[in-house]
Length: 624
Image (cartoon, rainbow, N blue to C red; front, side, top):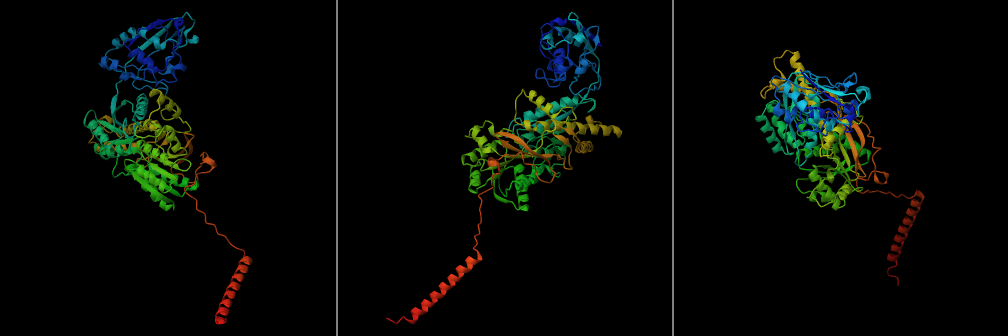
């Protein structure tokens, strides 16, 4: 054990806030360049507990610090770990604050703290690093307002004490991630951030996979089946053995990869693929997803159409299996409910002809199925020919990005205002991505806290895919809990196998992992999570509407719930839903019996008079 301390004077305190414990650990252990004199190391619990895990300043976990990884190696295994914010304040001893770095094999922590374990070449090396960096911490640590109750009088010195204790090394479980960073749908960066956040949280827990670390390796799937297969096979044939696959987002990628991944006995868990085809266990035996199949919204759409008085509906969709299956399911259910399909249009490249046909058929309620890139073309063409609100209401799938129609696109010649005008009043039917009750999750985070931290990790930017980010976080917890249950079963049954023994030819262990993942149930960011026998999520269906350019929630219902939908929050021009077509009225006029009898009598008398005149003319035809 190595201990050192530095005497600091509290009168030198400035006002720079310390953002997180990861900042402190990075300053202490991985910053070789600091030279500013250290003024204070007084620590305040309330300041440390706000954003301990997700610092914008130095977000890199200590154990992946490039500086340490290049210099510090386990001979013998040593490590350091940062205490939680409640422990960092230390204890009062004659006006001296004692703060420390502590380790143990499994460290139980408050959810607002972060534990870091870093292999060290030697304890003296770390000690010398800390001593040489004593003057470096001022830029981040100075200015934390000193608690007089802890530091005593203004003239009292403050001592910073760092204690280094050994801890056991952990074993990496390698996870392969497929994320569409670029491509037809490019929301992968937002999802990648969410998965990384979850892995950091899981690895810092002593009650989830003790003795193991999840280690993510990811590739860009480009939202392309071919690129996805290439990325998966390249990773599986090279590098360490992966124990599970995360992704993809696009259904085309998940369908291509999950038809092959089970041959390596790998469970594949997607955070976003919603194609109904993926429920087919004959084709995709070890595929699971945190997204329900898009066909799950069909019954809710039909109930909504009936409540709003719409019986004439048109569809237009992009030529992908994802949208084709949803459209076929919709048409089948429409026929059962005696709803009229005005026209059903499919396009692959340019949708100009198909959009014009919608107008020719006088389509008013249009169900669209497309990715954002082609969807912007459809919307622009609709604006040009007058298929806009309130004449037309679009019905779209809920996983489209909030502002997908406003993204810059040089292939269309419509302005953002025109696109917004065309989509006003549109209805999105999808699935619940964040628990509206803000219930704390298994990780301790609430959905609102996750949203804030995720936004900060993305440099305070809104990215494509943000709407699905919570599912990236939840899917990682699903994997961790499934692996944790598998580990427990192996130990309880006295098996000589462990998780790290998994190989691509081990069907028994692969099946055991799959079985436990199907049985996972926990409180997630999107609410209670559980799976059906096909590995599909059992979740909630939502109805949203574009109101004054903003997407607003108007209804939430379980996908298996029957009954009337509460659509009171929907807004319409004139206060009533638009009509689904030109109204045709049949008006029947009737006469009173008296008038009818009178007119019949006159007609009969007229007929008799005509006959009489005819005979009179015939009889007197020779009279001159």
